[in-house]
Length: 227
Image (tube, rainbow, N blue to C red; front, side, top):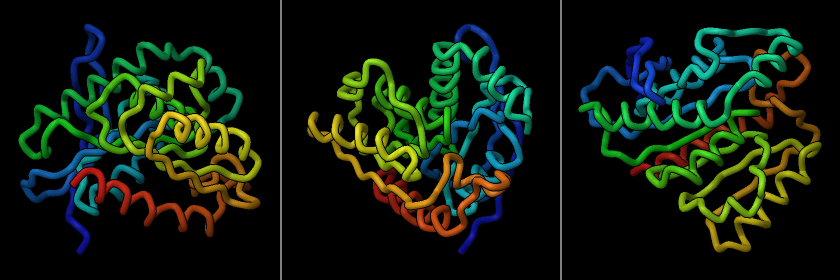
């Protein structure tokens, strides 16, 4: 049965400063498993907030760290500019800060957490799983791979990945490297699906059938790996 949820903006310490995140959590006291949702290049927009709320209704505490510090856009040129200005090391530390904040909350079940990201956030999921071994499950939606790609060997968490067939090369490389390093990986490639196919506000790019196929897989993956 879907949970009633609470949503709010929360503050946490990260990289010697204060960062913000959009939190959605069940009203019930828990403790609940936790998920970090990492934004696309648009920012923490209505779609990313909706994703956190969807996870919360299923019993997860979900937080989306605001890596653009309040900036949101629907314009590709502006999104590209924001992405180019993003300092990835700072973003990674803010994700770590969100994880530490989650661990300190009494409604969260322990220090282990899931991580899911879309587009640029998908790449940051992989970076997070490499650097933070409290990641218990990593879900990548059409994310880029780290450089060097063999740094993926540092991942300990199982990985679930979704790509459109236009990015099959990236998907296959992710699967190849993780398999070579004896990591747990499951990759799904969707024929005809474009980059950003999960985002239902992405006119022309949203693919209903592919998006609907990924959702129960993602939920089951977190339910299995986050306990």
